[in-house]
Image (cartoon, rainbow, N blue to C red; front, side):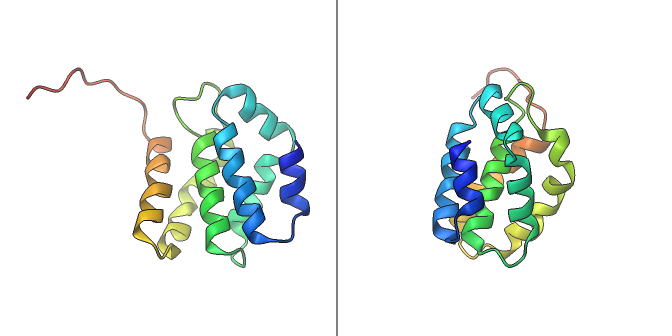
Length: 124
């Protein structure tokens, strides 16, 4: 919860970006995702993505956190809470200036929309 408090109180976008990145790293299991939800993390992600005045790096880190907490491989993820935001992130990705950053932010989101499937071993 301390990172979420810092994210809300921090005035510097660079620091908020780093906090969002740390939260993305920490939200790797259902328990951590539930803690994020419990302590207003959902609201922080939504506000960051919806406010056009937020700088690109901060919004990109929010997209990465959104992808993490809605990941299909996480049991009991937050996908249902973010359906609308998941669909609107295309606008944010369109604004990303660096192709490497866009790829790194958009590929996890792609996984949020697809169901994990196993197609068997590849034949060569």
